[in-house]
Length: 265
Image (cartoon, rainbow, N blue to C red):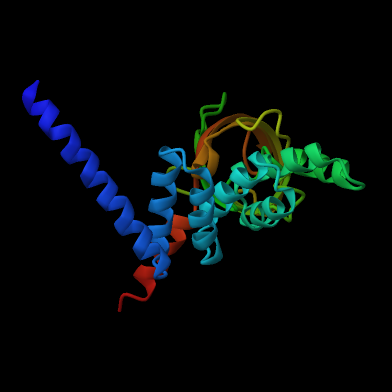
């Protein structure tokens, strides 16, 4: 107990010294220090000072801190300032900023604000999903002709808030290529996690030496910005009736690795 009584003041002093140090670094323009200092101040209940620290890092492009700044300003009723900070983070596709901005417009209730709330609520379930995905499926068939498929799909927010998607879709067997298609899809955000989808396929059926047309229906279980799992089924000229069991991943990390590999030599 005596040791604890001695250590507690020392730990408190160390924390205070660290906080002062991060505050000084922030005032000298260190963006990461502003972020850390803002969090420390928030934990200490110093909301106004935390807001000022987050404002500094928001100015330098730390979008999570724009959200934190906007939420603090919204809490104290400074709606104009909160709107600017939250809008900046919303444009960078922050889910927390989108929700806070909808709350702001709902509270303010000026002309046009209800339309903005409806738009934000429509965007909300899709906004934290990836812009593009790399998806792989195993496709068992009742005929025994099991195949696999891979797709590279684009679904930016400008595509009707990710309700629409476009991609390239390849189907293969164990020793052959079956199809190469353009995929055009629609997905409905039943909830932010549960997303039924329908996809139309147009391309070539190699084994049939013909054009290809087909489609798939299914449902995704979305994992935020990381990707999704999905279960569905479909049929096309090049593939018999089949089930689809798949996983999609955010392709941005894959794109970066491929870019680095391509420029490594």
